Length: 374
Length: 263
Image (cartoon, rainbow over all chains, first blue to last red; front, side, top):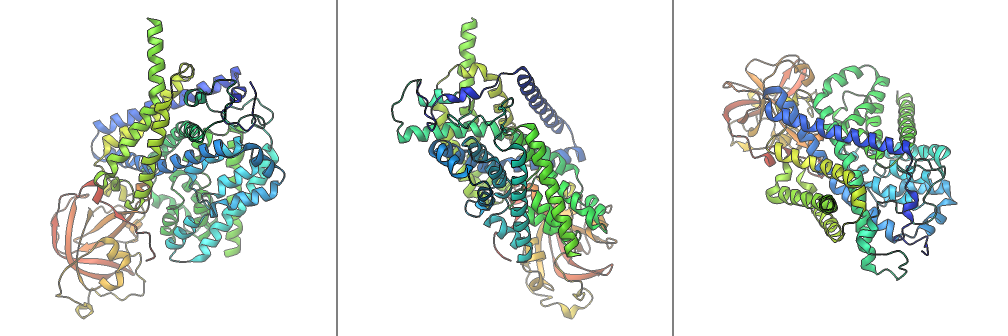
């Protein structure tokens, strides 16, 4: 078969499948966890149907929030998957790689500001980043875009300004910290992982497995939809490419959206258990305690980046500015739902470093802000 | 026999993605019909639902065009797992539709009853002359208009508004009240910015000769909107003249929504 390194229809993705016993065991364990989640959720639904009084009210609240988060996030996940499919098929891999690989710092700086031109929410950005990584963009730039895209964008700027009644200082601080932290974490991550295998399913590869050949790492769906038998070197029609993009996009969606479901369910359960006043009670009179606590709250509440400013603003008279800012900066970068979605895309060690670095960077940034504004 | 089962497995597995997209397509169309989605989302998000329907339809067409191959034998279990996980929210939606956030949720959220009213505002409760239109017509308003959008304009006027009753006393300090005045309760509704996860309660104090009301019941209150001084705080309050229990509105009309505009 004549392998075309830019042909998204080629079959080279089979090279990326790793059949190691340890990986298979990990994948089986992952699947068992998901089946366990299904059983637990089903059990809670059954209990809700049988219960009455406050227990039923609590479960109804949890389930309403769960369904609401999924209904709100899914359109953006669909859009993100579609964008990822289009990138996969229509953006030439070699051009993208050669354009960005040699300009790491400028690639990070541009990627962190891309949200200003292409605003995306945190749910939509994950499939896009996965495709961009498979296309060979530097990992550091992908991380910068992943973290800053849902935060440094005009929609978030306007919603923050509205929530804080036109207080532009809050907007500038939020977007400024978001940009600085995303670029910093991007650079830090490149130190550890640039050029290495970072995506889930690539375990065991020392180097990035998509530098050559197709960027496709899907199951062999291309066989199903495009009727491209091996050795078929006929030119691909535009509509053939569109259908291929849809195939990639729908596979991405099915692969990642399930983690959104699990994350949204956990968020609903936690939202139903957490009493806001108990959290606020811990923070009153302790300005520096408010920072890590509000970061944890942001991770547990899983709010979308357009809405979280309104919740932060409702704490305005109770929590110091750095605590509010910590809530607004970390939430779009890292929450429970996103962590689960990351686990569908990245390897565990990558998620561990990414999450701990991001958390630490936001914490230090907000402590700095707290010292400055005292 | 094994061959037939294998064939059936392949056929079923290959159709799973199409079934998932079809189910979600149906769900979004059902939610959009009659604005049912407002039971979970801000109605202003409708363009995104239209977008979701369009993309799900494209994905459905793509999934239908695929033909079964060996990948469905190898990946069959994984596909079923994906399908069940993605079908789970639909099952929950079907079971819980009709439920909404109420008094139980209020006990876990922060509600500042004096929110939006400067502490320096003088109490209008004791001074009848402060009433702008004491005997004027009753104006029907929402709690958002009372507390945020038209708070200054409505003080002293006779208003009518709907909401949910909360009479619990255990969390008054969380509502920035030292004590609930006798014969009074909190009237509230949830306001949604994007979805129910970010719902914020908006409430006022209602005082007066009040019938025995249960928590979570929906009522319509008519009376004069005044500022009461309670524990050194200026607290907006409706001095109730009439209180009627009303049936709960349909799920899509129970929440108030933030309009995307400066106010």
